[in-house]
Image (cartoon, rainbow, N blue to C red; front, side, top):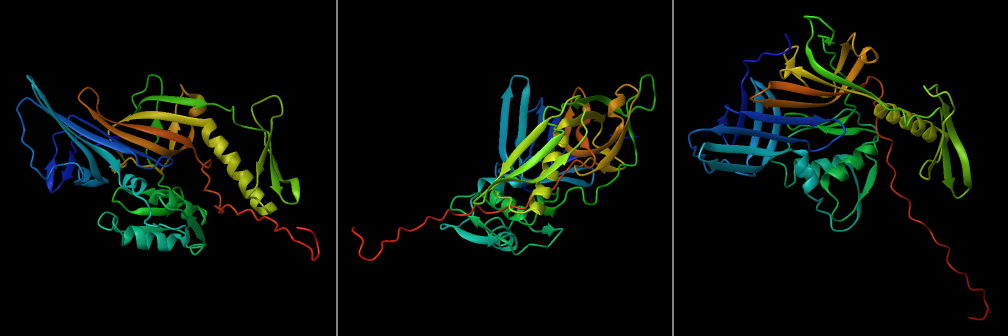
Length: 364
């Protein structure tokens, strides 16, 4: 059985709990920061909500006893007509606060990830929101990046994490994680199935997309530096095309063959990540007694979408509730192994200009 339908959807806001929602949506995606959420209800009788339930209030959402979201309410909407009263509470996850707020730096300066997080997140204006940061790999942690006046905290954190070659995401409890979202992927024990005439199906509907318009048989990295243009690295792969497709990419910040090799592998994986994708709708919000989450691996089996029968990675999921469909989860899936960590970020090098030299005795 996919899900315990009796689990209550509980929103705790400003110390009050509301659990009689009619509609809900909670997004999460590895490649999209600050995903949105909303909860709404309708009552035939007018409701009076406490003054503490307002925009800007802290919220936690639970499915049963499992925490699925920690956030701030961006908006609280009330409405009424002859038929009754409506309430809607919505917002974005805590990354929204990092996107909205700037690093309090008024002169451009160099800073590393550790200092950025400790000084401006855990000990700064947002310290009452973020209580923990987990970094999987401390290598290169002292490397610095330039932070410019007005730059958002999120952009600065992402850039500083890229110096270490790592991705940044948010856990449901509000923990900021720096690392590889698939480093310790949970393998879903229950296979997803969508067969014709079968009573074992646990998928409502699915769509498989194969778009190889950005896939190439040959990719080459072209360095563009003071020494001129030359090929630093190249890779060849078999494709579904019957002809060769060459892509030459100019990267001015790539200086060595090792950097070019890493860049070209990242480009190939990113192209494959976009080329092979799938979405699946399942009943309920949980599987294996866990709420669906990104960063998981699963098996999909079907005699209808034969090419989609494969191992997939969960890169996005949307939990939904509606009066007509009950609880459902929309899964965004990409092939296992196609995710690639960010390339090591390099600050743009300032261009140097040659100073004019006036020879002694020359006319000015």
